[in-house]
Length: 271
Image 1: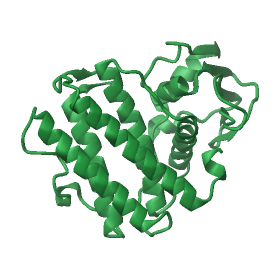
Image 2 (image 1 turned 90 degrees about the horizontal axis):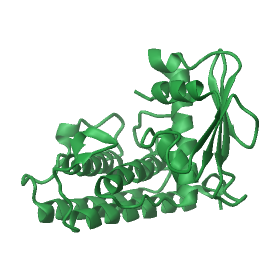
Image 3 (image 1 turned 135 degrees about the horizontal axis):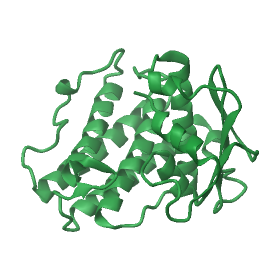
């Protein structure tokens, strides 16, 4: 069943389960003997350990915001152990910290439920917003970690499709609410992008049309002709859209105006 057609509690439970799974996968990389000093190819300013600390720190920051039902953003320095264990390069300490982090965030989100009021930077101020955001962040950073150690990237179709929905919602939100020069450049007449997953069932409906108009960026699910199309497996489309893979790598295929797709990938941002 597509994520957007589920009841709020069912979606919330699904996001919590995904966070749990992704943390477990990260821990599996830590305990596998991976080189924590290895450079993350998709985030070359980070080592694997820095990536893992960032990922766990984001979860701890969200956990404190949700647990306290924050009415404004909690500063990161107020989050206990936000930067990870004191010991650097210690797989056992890092694994224990990630395990505790995963247990904390999932328990807090489940206790809160999707509709608990919580500050957010986005269009919804709820624990449900953060469950969705963290599920997708964990998927993408989980992919970063997997690519660093040469493991395959696995993403469930419902989560991958919903992550693309959310990314488009973020870009749309930025267009409406935040002055941002690069994002503003996306606007213009007569240009569109079609995303077409080739490996999913009709139930997932993993196709999108993104329209770049003079006034706003808007999008919808569906199969329609566009200025440029990106076709291929859904997980690869997700990673390309998040700038983790080149858009013509693997089994991906670009049809039409490649420059427009590159133009989008450089400028589609939320900060």
